[in-house]
Image (cartoon, rainbow, N blue to C red):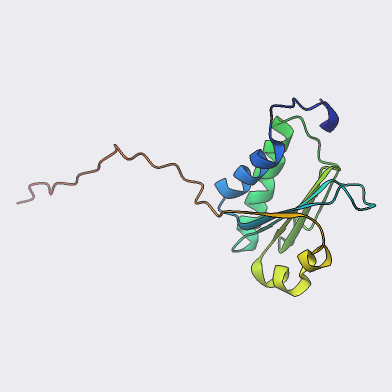
Length: 140
């Protein structure tokens, strides 16, 4: 299935943002690039606390996109890990460690594009009915 043949009931952007949050990515922002003379429709930016986490986010985003029928066209920066670019043609995902994101400030280049900021999530499901009790064992 190509990117254009996606089922209309699948919100790809939501699924990719969820994948980022599931690996504890944060400060996620999407820019609508469809009105600009570029090849992609959406730029998606996210932050990760360190290079290991940025690679884990990239791996999970790539796997999620593949499960949705999207093919990765190009990947850059994965080995170094401070700025990873995943190019799915219509969607380009940037994953930064904070210092690198602040230094390059790519978002400011597209400040006139429509933008959506996603609320940070822990990515962890909680079970409010779950309780855990510890009782000391008899050691004597």
